[in-house]
Amino acid sequence: MTSEPKAHPEIALRPVVSGDHDFLVEIYGTTRAEEMAMVPWTDEQRQLFIRSQFDAQQTHYGQKYPTAAHDVILFEGEKVGQLYVARLDHEIRIVDITVIPARRNRGIGSYLIKQVLDEAQHKNKRARIYVEEFNPSLNLFNRLGFKMREQHGFHLLMEWTPAVIGSLR
Image 1 (cartoon, rainbow, N blue to C red):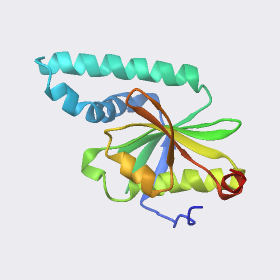
Image 2: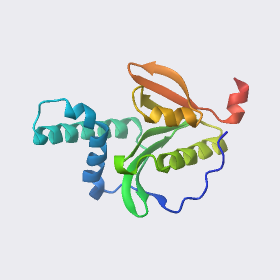
Image 3: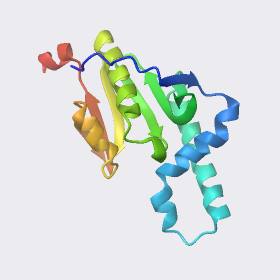
């Protein structure tokens, strides 16, 4: 069970609007930066690739999770990330959470994930997320009580189980 998240007035969520597209592409690009540094492309080619991959990802998420909440993460009023959460019948799926590199390791992601876990606890649902096995955030999910349930290539399905369900296993 998670502890009750403390109020964090500096951290807020607001729904994504059409004017956020470039910011969301930028965030997505930060998740592919190491990979992009290895390809012999121009900056323009990299940006076109990132935009096309982002658009494909958004299309996939929209089709797979049509009712998901997609929010911009604000820290002290500044856009610093995104949180995409699907509230399904039997689980709460964290589809994506990304904080810009300059604002990572400040408790923003932990705070928001703990809020999701608190919701899952109250609704007696599992919380799940796919994490790449080489993603540093895997440590965060392990620390918050997520366990690996499945592996698909280099993607790990991580699951957090509320106390009531966990006691039935």
